[in-house]
Image 1 (cartoon, rainbow, N blue to C red):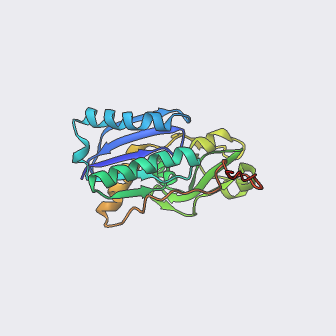
Image 2: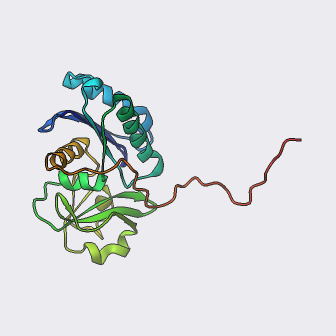
Image 3: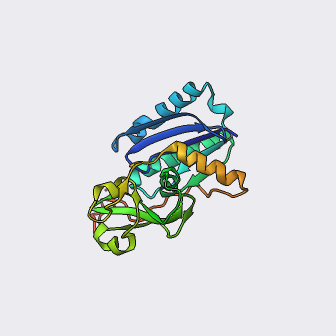
Length: 218
């Protein structure tokens, strides 16, 4: 097993190579505006560090969000392209699940919350690092204060809103190494991690304007 994992659902552009037992090489750069520019060079760097070639990869793991539309689709399109060109499966993992797995919290309950912008968070509640209790959602922190009260929280969304998440902890952003490790655990257990389909919890900012004027050639 040689898994190439990547995630662009948070401001981190994160890539890792995992052999089913451990991370062989990893790269993470936090830059919310340069996902498309940074991702493929990071893949090249990780492969070179591990002394491997892309053709040796047996599976792709990609974070499916939730996350901003533009950033999230960079990782998903890249993963689909690699999977198609190599003829290997592409496994989708919820980015919040990856953060839960990387949290270091051995027993729950706890919450994962990432920054959804617009003064909102993407969040889910977990029983332990592998078991979600709720589906991912997007809400204003004040609106979920009762749901998350009294439990630890990880992720940049939790760190941004200490009034709602007083026990906020690192990691702030997604880790491709954690995504790959979680995928390896699920694959060894005979589970299918999931399809590489994006978790878009709200409509993109860019939309076709209503009542626009149609111009026809004369």
